[in-house]
Image (cartoon, rainbow, N blue to C red):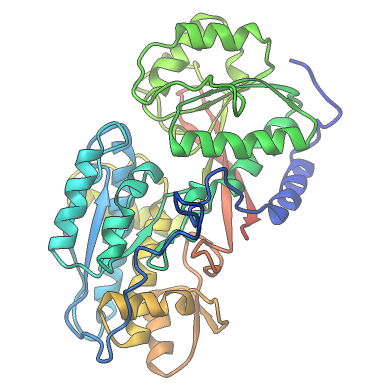
Length: 442
């Protein structure tokens, strides 16, 4: 590997990345606020508003999570996060004195078959739920967001990171940061490790190309060079592809000293191909879409010392134990992954607190109060639904500070700040949390 003068200690890397992250913005090649005619795009929820008399019905929260498809491994932590939050809300007296229910729980599928998410969105609209938690995939959300928000449903994703979704609708929020934040962190990690020539193996998907663009910007800003898979080169592969001999051969021919794999389930075919062509597996980098447990997929040591990033704080201590216990109780299975569990917990809690603040469980009332309970207007810091609800009941403003560690919602309904976790794969091909960098989004 070619080393550059940017190779530093881990502490210096964290500091440099934090500085870059603090200055990053949510730029995107496709402006979601622009229509096909070039003018401003109309908010799908433009006609939605809070009723004069808020509803006091029991709060129902729908979910649109990947029960099937290439992202199905992300369902258990999201399901645990939402379910545990509802359990905590109800143990604290519920919302307006009534228990919260999760209904219906629908399957988002993945971007390989959008009919699955379209059907789920129809089911959620017909159920007249005021709030939906999901989807995990940005491409899936872009498929259903107009349908959900035009029907005045508040959609809160715990995992969407595509920059195209920033400010898309007044009824859309997310508790995960946009890719500009993760892209900056990943790019700084790569160049901070001393890599100057970088190749991308990236699928042609909103998530993949958007994140690639952000990582490329960070790499080039640090003096690095993208030698394969760069923006505008047309070297992406389609989602769902299963063989990658030609792509890996072409990438390795450029003699990169780091390879970034941005894909979902396709990773299970890409990694063995890289291994068979003698790629340096220690110089492989991945992101939240594929920084996962591969202990049952690859031979021991295949990914040892490869690295990846996942937006969000890694659940710790009591929360991690409670998430695992809840999932075991509800499904009978062990919880093997915690990706976006904290973000799912916070998305659910924020929706419930917005209902408490507005004294109504309808979507308009919840939307009207989402930013306020996140701390956008200041307020007393509180870390649990019980503590925050008590403050709201006494007439005080609050700043909910949940386990995901995100900052208040900004004007685009993105977290104003968030953590990016840095992971390194062990000898069993499992990602192990190492550290986190906090970055800001504008």
